[in-house]
Image (cartoon, rainbow, N blue to C red; front, side):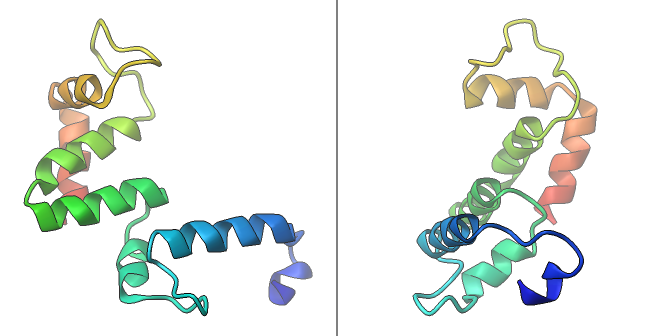
Length: 113
């Protein structure tokens, strides 16, 4: 925080506390706020905490390919080509739409590595 204070405005204390709590809850930080082995794994994935957690858990459960495709669909920066997909669609609809999109299949393959 001190290092960055001269370059950019530092984050608010409440934001840091919230991030610490979320990362501790996810098992990424220990109670002493040290990075855990799980935290190292999470940090290796350039994704939101919940998406990275999903990929790690799905890997252990043997369904990484399906979870990677879902995460690719959730992170799509372009409209998915699926008529009934809207802001209230569930994960199954997003997964089905992602299965039909070659760009997302390639992104899912990248996430699996």
